[in-house]
Image (cartoon, rainbow, N blue to C red; front, side):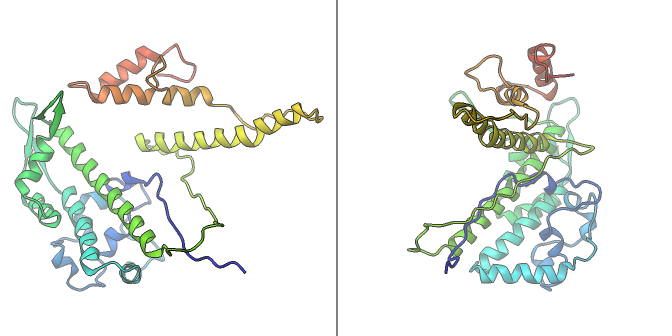
Length: 317
């Protein structure tokens, strides 16, 4: 008889965009609503969340409740799971504080300075609350968003940011932070569940990935999700069908060749062609544009059109 002694989780393609934007009929990750459920009576006060969840922009753009889901009961299970998996009280509370900080970040306001390409805070109340949750200085926190330090050559300089750039930076920080919390949670769970000294001669692997996504509004995230899925589909088709049929041919087996699907290798190369080959793929051109001073979405689009429009069958304007 075989007994499952331990388990290990890996995360892949976390839907970070949901942290700051929700599609109609959806809501943000459950924990953001669970902390408002009242399961822990003093939690909202400790997290400095003094408004209803509907007034925290990052998590209130679509649904706030889900039919059949009791956030108070679910939060009780979440809180208990932290204890079962041997998270300390400090670790658990720090997770809740980071959730609070992200909600405060969504309510931070900025404004454009007149006749300048520089944004500045339009009030600091929410930034101060977020900073308190992060355990950092509020002034330095705001400076990191409005005038971030970047490396130019061998020197570090402060880069000015306009209003749009600051708003993007705020959202990017919230998404990046949630991703890091999630990965840390997975790592911590794996450490707790790992049984040292147990033979790993056998394992069961389960791969759960996002399906192809086509929404009314498609972002960079959908490009990556669909690209990864297509790469996996190509890999599977090639190894399970193409190579297998080639083996049939070598062995002289009578076989009618079957086309198992549309070959999108040309489209994959358009996206991922590496810098050592010319013309560059879309991702390589994006990486290159990210280090160009004063580059914008428009400058990248212009270069992509110049490079690929009319030259690649899968690139259309």
